[in-house]
Length: 277
Image 1: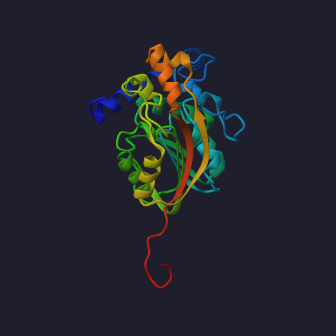
Image 2: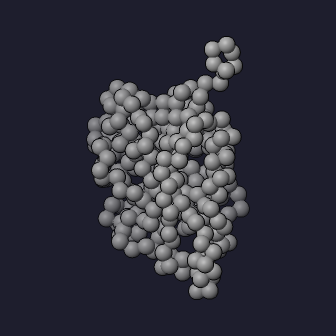
Image 3: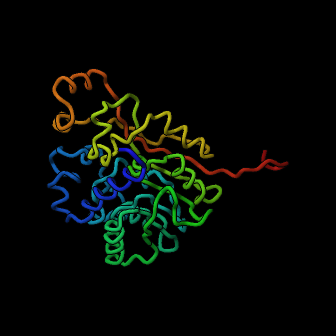
């Protein structure tokens, strides 16, 4: 990966392919949650079916957590979902915010936006909209959102500080986010870092956990909480596509730790005066 634009184009092409597959093909090809593990996507998703508002046709099994379950969404909230895909988290959020709330999904893949809009129209949801846009430059005015959610997408953004500064910009004062993503506590082999499939699957693009949390703090967020953390194990049948036997032994011996985390943080009022400092 040489440039940010090349990375974005690779991710866009991969997720366009997934969006254009039907549910059965998506599962059987292992780009989603099929029974095989020849792709990295299906080893990290969490089950959504117990959540109210869940719609199977909108679930492409591409997440690594359940941010909407932890997002503390209230009736009437404006919720923004970054990397909204086919609309899965948006529809769960819509159940929580109710008919008087609003949900805005952002995705930079046209095929995903079209799929999500079709799903919303089929469900008759008039307060859920999907906008084509880049997370590094969100097509949303400042101080709009009560809650921001995102599921295994911020990891794919090349300029993560810029992305989190955009989250801060669009949140209202007193608003918060709940974001699920992949982080590391060790170094990945170069062959994995350079693999497009592993990048699009969120592993090769993962950064160190402490660096990730520091980016959030540097963006101005307060009251950061790790709401959930789980290890991600890459099966040998995936590793062998990128590493030889000796390299796999070395990788496993080094115990590189890959985690899915769900992190929460708030945009507090910036004030220095007699009533708030």
